[in-house]
Image (cartoon, rainbow, N blue to C red; front, side, top):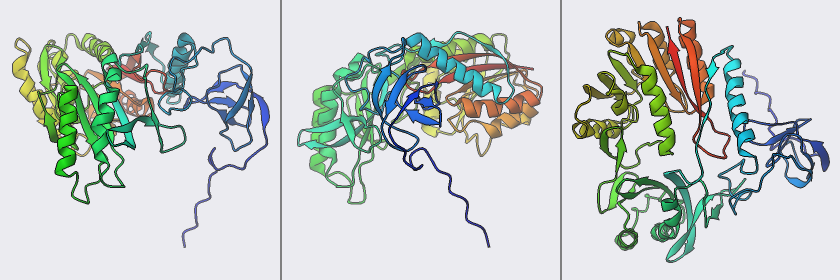
Length: 428
């Protein structure tokens, strides 16, 4: 008979303790301050003395008794209630240094040392993509915003200092757009909003479909609100509900028509910085593979260097990439393939004519693909990652096969969050 696994207490279910005064010693991976115990306190900074309320390991702060010199006034009126940002109270240079140190520490856990370049840091009001949660409000305006801290409820935001001003200005129109979506009591819509070159593109998920989906009247109201706001397109789980014009983005020399719900880097300047690093590191290549290519974030830039084989598991993204090739004359050849690179990675034998591989996987990383790159004769690999933990796992696979991680560019694309991204360059 199998023994039951012992229960491990988490910060939220550990035994409760009395109120206590503590010294914050560091900031942890989720952005909380850490005191001896350990105790975790949101919105605190190293060196601060604070009084914590009674509770388990993760506690609320009753008072800041001695503030850090690095503490600043948060720019957002919703900070502390909204669950979107964790670190607006930290002076920017210290906050950015903490992110870089976290990345260095993650590399060190796999005994990886490398040159760490100065970090790219996104600025306020530069996000072109937001995922906004809607809850039922008035007949002509839903409540719309980000989830409240420690709750499924939503903060009905009036401002957002991370968002592009065009998205911030569109919040009232987006509330109206979401108003007809609550015919079914189980609907909990999320509006995935993207600012494109031709206007705002909205893909809606979370509308209950078991009852037959939205009524014709609700769809009509939604289309009227979209037209009044001059949105480019509104889709529901990829199905077009309203379209005035095709949403497009400029990627390198190409103009790409975005599929509904397509992945796009959140900040255009971050995309440009990562793209510049990738292209600079690929100079001299004779044939390149761009794996997990999406709609061509790096493909079109790399095709200015050498012919590119591009592959991704999202067939609509690959079709959009292929269709955009004709908009960018003068590049080297691009061959695009829809291929699940987790189940069917590009094999070492298929890389015989390729000397440089770029891989930009989702958060789970590219374990299967990294193993094939390690087996191949590829001379150079460039990894782009939104998750340093899986990046170092894949990096260890490459390093054990003879690659050296020459340099890493930290990328702070998600401002005031604990999240850090990176570009890493390997040579053999």
